[in-house]
Length: 346
Image 1 (tube, rainbow, N blue to C red):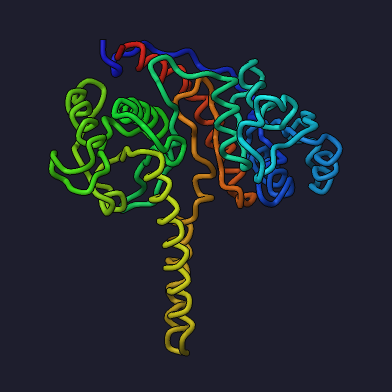
Image 2: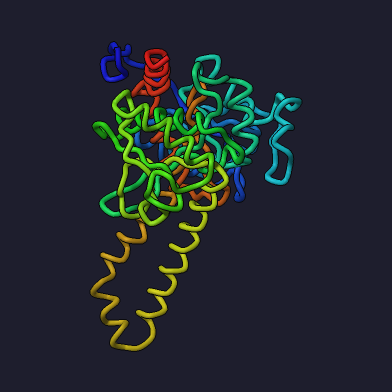
């Protein structure tokens, strides 16, 4: 039986989303603000962190006591400059409390804008891997022509094997079908040329594996180049975590520079300023499409639970969108559907 023929999965019980409220570059303020906005949109939230500080911050938001928000005490937090391996010994750290809540069935997902390495380590140690997945990968959406391109791995695994790329292609395929209503999404393998024989030994080996899986749960397009990510040549692009992270940060940095250049050009003289006023709404929409906070956070795909990793510099909007995305993934039974797909493929 193929992944497309999988039996229906029972509707998920609605659970709150656990937010590592102490994580991130800007402390708890944007986390609490984003949680309030998500709660106002109908998502229940568990704010995990220093109980006293969180209650004080919540008190700054009128009406927050009537929202579906609960504070869960966590006496410790793993800072951005600390080691990810600390999650093994610091059981009271906020990210560990978040992932335990997911493991115990008390939370739908764990969301953190804090230490990405600690979040990955905590999710893997606490939740474990989906059977058939050797290494979980970070899946992210990148703005592209006509919408977005899904890229993975965006930084979880620098040194990989070809089989991991095939597994990630399957994970991303199910993800897009379940959460984005993409029917039979196409998969591209990032390389230095479109031809089958181009690329490193790893890419050539992965190309062969993906070609064998074409039509068996994966719709493999072939090799794609960097420019294809933004042309939406394929719905999904798979690559190693080192390359994927470089691509992601290069794109985000270039987007900021380009928008800065546009603003400079539109303010260069009176005529340009008048033109800028006429194009203001269109430019605002463009800036929103290129803003990472639109998607909120990236999912760590392949663990037996939902874990989302956001930017350390995330603002309240990014936190809100991450919580909304996490709740939607839980309600769609994403993890169960991923497990079913791998069980049938194996």
